[in-house]
Image 1 (tube, rainbow, N blue to C red):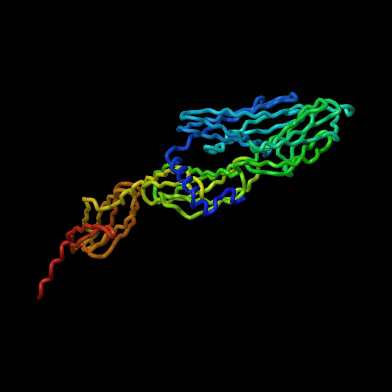
Image 2: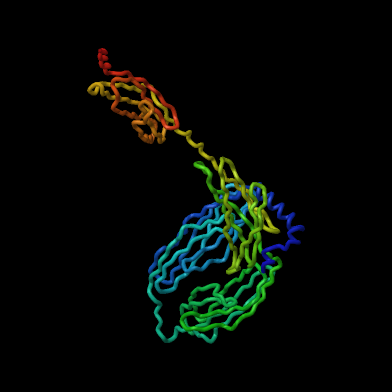
Length: 452
């Protein structure tokens, strides 16, 4: 099955490569349409009558840029099931709307749940859930006439090869009027469930649209009342063009402005219309192709499948980077661009000694003296510096000044001295500037004693 999704190297080197190039150039030239979807509405959202038919609706908004735009969507249900994929082709450019509806009939019991609309292309987006609740108790059964005849359930199959589909037609027969719950089983897997009111006999239908050639069997099973199955009806569906359609899209990260270096992530989506197997792809980074990588599709269910991939960009300076995805032997996505603006680092803070440093010696009981000094340091911003006071070459005080913003801090000292002598005091920043001031003696020298 991998060959169904993945072209061989020989095929990729021939005409398929040329075709991929055409797709790539057209995809690069036309922006991807913008898509949004309204919240799903359930009408009625609550009911206490049975049977009740609940209709789910949502509106898809597409901003197209010309040509043809294919919108693919499906319904997601609270019980985990999904509807078949439906497609609508929009022509021209501008804002287009697609209204999607699906109805379900509830015949008895208490039921609650939700449905949501999931758009698969041209962009993947899912609506908010629409919730519903049906509360009408269990159906009554008189035990006499209104029973299902479990021996007269049959199924027939017609195959429409031109449209690549098969219609399953089953007939349910009862001995009276009764609500009957049933399900269709195809190749051992439940593909549809419903309930109908049968007035003696009624036909029910299910259409298989596998997108590729398929053969197997189908059975109609009665779930309640009773427990019965039809005979197996075998079918063979032939599709003239069963090749899966594989595509890729890329979303760029939002523009960034701030500190660098920084890592930004591009996200990609690889989609396959159907089938099972491996798909090879590679990232095109600023025009340079990277190594081949692969994703695997398991082929479960009908309709589109998708896988998410990512690629990182590490930016240490302001600039842009572009990304696209190339499918091996297939198309190349449109190119998207991410942008990084690095903020310049603030200038380093500086500190220096302000003018006005003072030193003075005073008497302290001659011949003793005392020297005092005061100095100030100014800083332009956050910074930590160490300052010292030295007296006649010896450090008498050391202090660390920490600035959290622009400002001035002062440092003073007092030290005992010899009042008979003058000297100098130095105020400095370790590893920075300094200033030196002289001071004078403050005590008179004693008179010399005359020699005899």
